[in-house]
Image 1 (tube, rainbow, N blue to C red):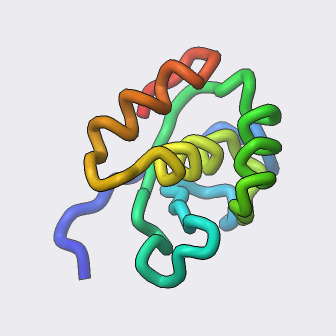
Image 2: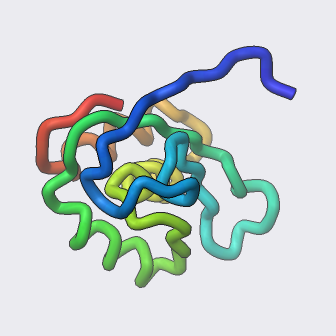
Length: 103
């Protein structure tokens, strides 16, 4: 039902080129029900060098990952930090990311 979209061709940095690893990636906050499913949608270019550590932290918080990508880590991190102000959540998330990237 959206009127706007973003496309991104992907070099498979993390995970095989497959539908479940394709952008955009969506967040699904743990225990928050339908209200948070897909609340954050993200397209990213680059590499997040500390994605394994962030993935482990987010899994411990109850996040479930559908892909093997570092992009999904960013979507879940922003979702975790989101409390009604998207800009604030992104500004909190970006300093935690190590690597060369654009979102």
